[in-house]
Length: 458
Ligand code: GBH
Image (cartoon, rainbow, N blue to C red; front, side, top):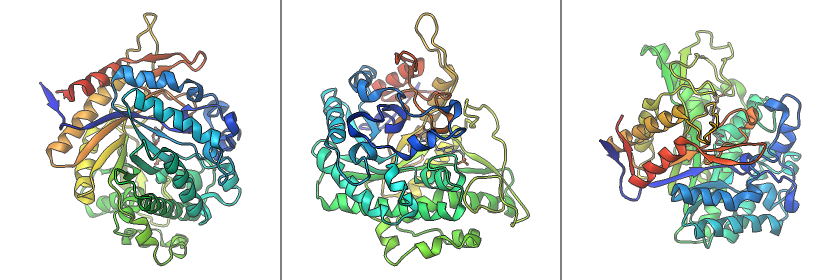
């Protein structure tokens, strides 16, 4: 028995520039905030940075060949702003030329390219002027988006403005575990607002370029809140978490504006409201053709009675929420494996986003992998995670969610941000000493799912 997906369901894998490319000084690339952050002692496990990572900049041919071998019809990658514009504003033709070659190689291999314009690697020169706290970044990002679109738009139809503004605003400016490493809850909310504005402004500008086949999107990360009790206090804790983690980013994109309860919940920050100008909500609500859904794990929450006590959860200004340890089987990141949450999330999003369809733009798991002497990576944990989560997507489809595709995170083991090279998410193992690639058992399993357009029943 197997669960068959709809005809035309989009299958593929995803990566991000800073996590795989390496070659941080090649062809005029300028420094990004992640180069700077990674050089700070203690910021990244092992004191490493994104160079050489998977050396994909020099090995992209081989990596495209892997996609072809696995039979993956689509590949989601990101372009590095500091490669295209080393100082954040001046075009470097050699940087653009790299993505030009990559797109040509993908098309020659029969792989559909999906471009993400921003996956957290801001040019350092723009951070020196305030980064995402500076409203001018909205215009800068729009110029950059148009530059890439002008160059690749004749061959690329799927354009994602931002990947997970939650992470780049909240984890980068609010908690300091991501670049640029700032810890200021008010700044994080302002940075988030500017991200959303940049999304809307770029989406509008790309739309005005008038390529009829363009499909525009934003990719958001979601973590459903699971509370043990269904009493008012537990429901309120789940609501508070959900507002700030999920609806804060989704609702304005859908034209609903920021959730009203947010202003009550984070009123003590008093930072967000002054940053919002007339016309901002309309700009953020630029129409999109699909919403990208990144899902890894739910968050267990309980109420905190003292609303003045800071939460142990790193969401800016969050009060009244105690985050509990994850339960059941965990991945090597310590994240809970809970496929039911993916089904519930997609059903909820399907209702909230309709008629705009959904694409699972990232889903996957880190485990400790070994290459056996016979050259195989028997990653049963990851294979099981993928099977369960693919069945979860299928269950959401059966309940009416309009999900159009699933992109596994990630094609390759790569630079896992503040965890360095200690966490492996790839369908393909990378030996970071030799740069040797080995398709894991999970990669073969996924290739089989794609070939059959079906996942085996559990
Ligand atoms: C994605 O982010 C990224 O897009 C990708 O680059 C990355 O490699 C991949 O996942 C794997 O990590 O501190 O309360 O926010 C994942 C989003 C954000 C999910 C942080 C887990 C931790 C809980 N992640 N979150 S909290």
